[in-house]
Image 1 (tube, rainbow over the protein chains, first blue to last red):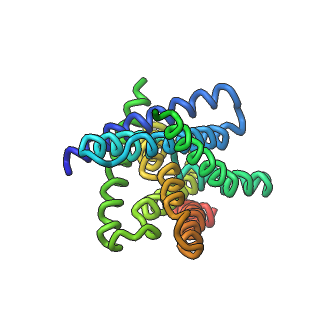
Image 2: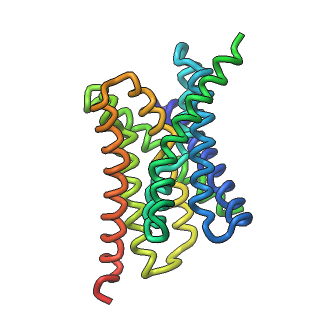
Image 3: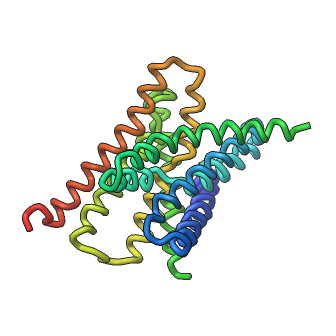
Length: 127
Length: 130
């Protein structure tokens, strides 16, 4: 239990730093309007990779369980964000309702499609 | 570089609390796939993010380090989008009502709580009396 928590915490550290790095790069590239774009980027790439890893690593052995906790719960869980998703959605309402709809409802749909695509990639790469 | 330290510390704490919440809620709901620890973490995280945002609109830049630790690190990692989509994907072969309740809880609940958080934050900051 404590060992699991350490792996999740370590992954969480890495995921949060990667998200902050992505956010800083988006801030340099696309000043104003960058927060929504950088959240879109981390959440959608996170879904794609989540699909790939969940298809590749099954929770059979205890090593695989630990690896899933580190990569999926820790790194990807922290790399992607829901608080940023809801806060950005609310600030988009003030700017444009169509953009809000695209961001708030479109993002989960595209995330789901990318996740299924990621799983498909992990299966088709197996021999 | 010191910013990365604050983000990392908050990120570790947020992920560990999300993990503990998911174990706890799963036991509490007898391993429900609809009411999950992820939903609770996302709702609580959205409310707190709204609270901070509402407060900071009238008290800007209290402390940049606190924002990095708490909002970017802790709340960013406490909440998760990829696990939300993964849990929904696992419901695809369940009934429509399971899927609808899950989405309503996650998306509707979190959006509403974020809004309440923003309002509560600006009241706390005295925004409505200024």
